[in-house]
Length: 314
Image (cartoon, rainbow, N blue to C red; front, side, top):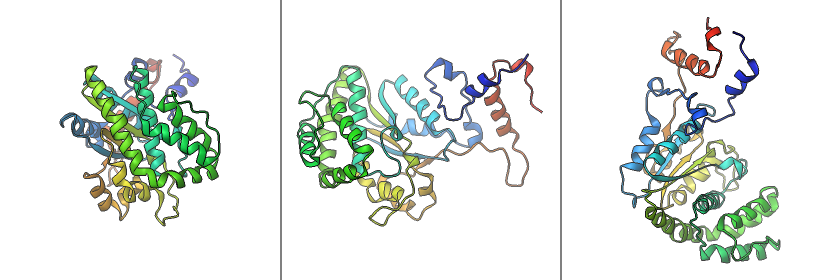
């Protein structure tokens, strides 16, 4: 039977992340853990589920770009939701400039995504700190942001982000203003957003709140004004602040940090070693083929072929 190349290519599109919670994607999922050498996602999940919901965790996850991290993180999301956790997953690259990120950008992105997710299930929280902050930012930037008093938190942050994303000048001015207020922003997120959110989620039968921040592994390895390269600046020099959110958090981080001299300090900042998702091996160090890895990769491709009866491998 003839192979439909266009349909086959679309099913194999490497830029498309499988969402295993969807039946149409689940049929394509292949578990590579037996050849990767570890069940990393299960390890991340156990860290979250085995601790008290009142005890937040912060974990780091990395691997080569394209090795399947996003697919595995979405599988983690699905598994945690089965266990009655409310999970907020988002791709940081959708709203942040990977070439130029600061800690306040990440914190505001978390606040926006959590708020938006809560609003979707009729949990509307309006932290007083942010209402005042939006007004002050508008006055400081001398740019009307049109954020009404009754506007949702996610709407306010989205308007600020949209206003500054394409203007490095405005973004720089905003960071200059927000930098000394980082601890205040953190305190507001914890006390006025995360704490009441978790309480309301428990009233709905949920065990807790989990935030998964994907694509931070894609931040540019550019030099910051502080003299540190961006990955080290964010996760080592400012890692303590990223580790202070009072809910379960999983961050993806650049793989370069695993091979840097800053790894020890990174581990100290977050209290645990980063989890690395290995590539699928197809060749051993002695140059011989690793048949198990090759077989699973063949299976991955064959599951995407609706016409596999007429398709064979040499």
